[in-house]
Image (cartoon, rainbow, N blue to C red; front, top):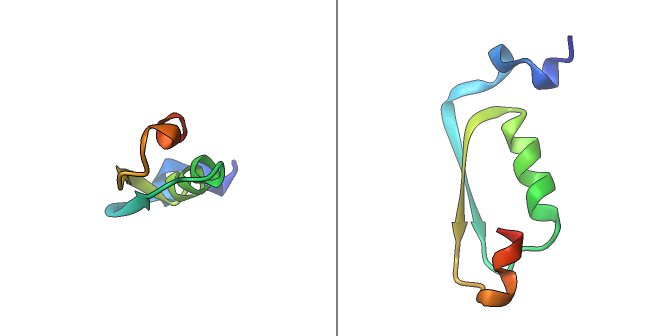
Length: 56
C-alpha cells in the first residue's frame, strides 16, 4: 500500500488555504500534493482576472 494514498495517514483536523492570484500551471500539482497529506484544501481566487479562471 502506498502511504501517500492511504486516507488514514492524512491529517483530518488540518486544512490548507491556497491563495491563487494569477495561478500558474503548478497550482493543480501543488493542490494535489496537499491532498495527499490533508483531507481539506480550499483554493481562493484572489481576483487574477478572467484570463486565469481556467486554472481554477
